[in-house]
Length: 196
Image 1 (cartoon, rainbow, N blue to C red):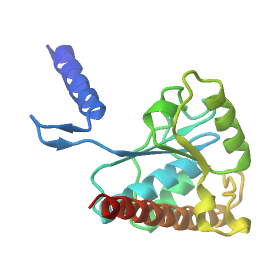
Image 2 (image 1 turned 135 degrees about the horizontal axis):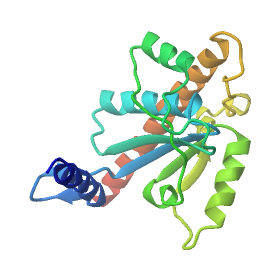
Image 3 (image 1 turned 90 degrees about the horizontal axis):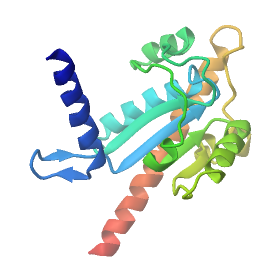
């Protein structure tokens, strides 16, 4: 009985994620899906996920879904790096994310896939190029939204000493996410005005 109930719950969640809007349940379904990716899904991408989730909540963007993943299986099922969690806590944020690897399906499920550096970007582009049919998601450097060439690469702080590397990454991620939300909402407003 317990297994049956769990299966029903999983199917319920899955079903809601497949529909834009359920008229029966009146539940909004995400129309913007964002995935952050770094090499191991333990430092940068989980921080980015927590930061954007906070911004989405703050701006009442109920139709957004945010997640993160890694390119390697090193941290699958593991909590994010302790220093990253500590830094998020200092800023009033938290994460309950457990590491996972990116999958082929992610390229079809998400609208935007953000990499943290050029190595991540190239690998994601190569993965997408091998898929058939070709995915339509946007694969971009997260830091490109900052608008400053010197800041568009978000360095991996994993091997850095202390909190300096994490603080630098946090600030870059925060500014990038804020600018992405502004960019998206600006485009959304322009489309809405054009339809009137």
